[in-house]
Length: 97
Image 1 (cartoon, one colour):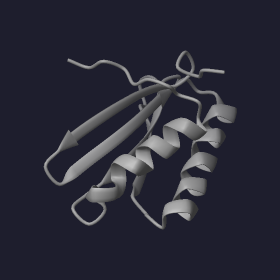
Image 2 (tube, helix red, strand yellow):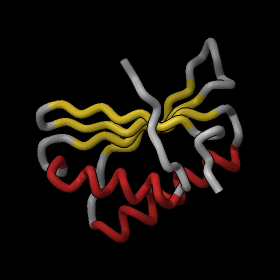
Image 3 (tube, rainbow, N blue to C red):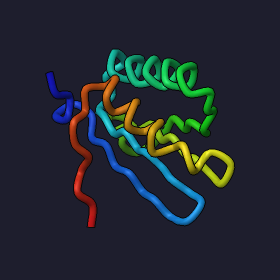
Image 4 (cartoon, rainbow, N blue to C red):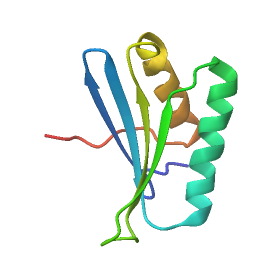
């Protein structure tokens, strides 16, 4: 099963900084699945990237969770993101311009 229609994944990479944003509606079940996947991958990898739960006040039906790695974790963050995407059954990221 592919969850790309329920969760939109965006990855941004810069020097010494990487971010995976997972955008979804206001579905509490999907939100829990995302946090469960993050917790699982943290335990597997020993990494502890910053996790930000974003809810826009003007559009609460559109939420996102961002996972951000800085200089300390950056070398292993790509693997972390890959494991998150695999656990959530997301097989592609959105193509951003």
